Amino acid sequence: MTMLGVVKTDGRGGRLPRWLTIALAAAALPVAGCSLDVTDPDIITPDNLQGASALPTIRAAAIGDFALSYSGSGADGSQGTEGITMMSGLLGDEWVNSETFPTRIEIDRRSTQVTNGTLTGWFRTISRARRSAEFAADRFRALSDTLSNTGYTEMLSLSGFTYLWFAENWCSGVPISTASPDGSLVFGQPLTTQNLVDSAVARFRHARNVADSMSLPAAAKATVLNLARVGLGRALLDSGAFANAAVAVASVPSTFTYNIQHSLTTNRENNGVFVAVNRSKRYSVADREGINGLPYRSAADPRLPFVRGAGIDSVGFDGTSPQWNQLRFQDQKAFIPLATGVEARLIEAEAALHAPADTTDNAGVFYGKVNGLRTNPIQGSYYWQPPLSVPPPLAALTTDSATAYGGAVRLLFRERAFWMWMSAHRLGDMRRLARQYASYGDSVSNVFPIGPYQPTTTKGGVYGPDVNFPVPFEETNNPNFTQCLDRNP
Image (cartoon, rainbow, N blue to C red; front, side, top):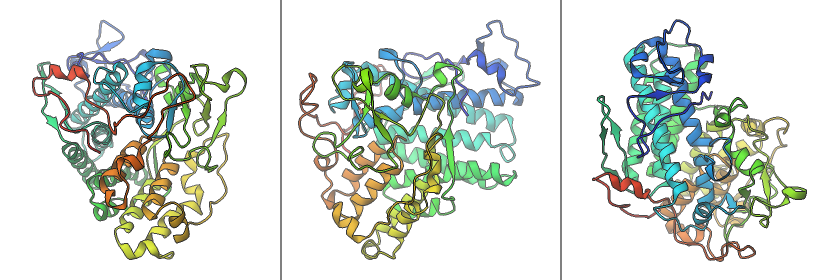
């Protein structure tokens, strides 16, 4: 699903509107009948992308940019390109830093500066993915029959996810700039977290409505329709519209998955999670990070496969931190799920929590949804890629389980963390837990890592107050932007 390319930027995280650049590998795309008259074989200019025959190339480039922003790439060292999967998990409690690069340590310690160069690169990558998806959606709308081509609704949904990532991971006040047809940059106004979520909701709803009215084979239609439904459900959860979120995903099969594919063809197409953890050893699987993080290793849960490195690989790049490698993604070509039926069931389970009597009833909707996944793990089998096998059924949860884990809410968020490990959900969930469930006692200090930071290493210090990322300093080039509106969950 990934066709990866090189995209020139304007220095502010946006794509130069005069150029759509793609890697030489684009020649392998199904673009028969498309005559591209270019003088530089690496670059395709907009005048060569005006016909419908160019749409597969445009879609591939957009998916390539999206994959880079989600999963990262095979680039190594200080020039590595991590996706939202790594960066959000580092600020959350999924990863612990096992190298020496100060900007990543800063993020892991929850004390990120606006001048953090690594963060600036991540912001640009997601901005580029947003622009690519919106450009592609515009081209599909203009050049194809949107009721017989899945490209339009698919690109709308992918753009919706980029808005969600800004909402779930950054502070309130992210400016969204756009490029005008003449190539000039139109500086955007700072958007609140809710503004960003609303923007995502609008895109997912439109994508769903278009997909629902399409005349296509059932399988193709279902893929883009369910992608939009899961995205919409996720965005509505962020808004606290729990009942509406459950309605949005009710028709999504538990076996549904939309995967972001990777390959060995180029570094840019590699699975960046595998590279950053298993090969480069700059991140390590966390366990009770700080004094209150989730027990990703000590839980001994089959949904969280990991292994301690051996020999020289038993420590991270810094030479001292214990290196624990994830095993969910086994190599550089492993795919990473973006939207799944498992998430749909967990959304329905959360909605059930808002019917108070149900949370105390073992036969109610809440336990029915979570146990339906646990007792039939084949529904989540795409998380266990070869050579791993699907684990045996997990024990059903009961009200006693909720008591043991501090209540039904915490039990649910533990299930979400374990099912959707390494898929860029955890930081958004931690913020939601502190924002929407504060009345349950889930304040920032009860949700985010606190206490001494890596006291057994030379990194030391204590955890800071960050619960999201600041907008990079270079965005002050935008006359409409000064700083985050707030840093609240």
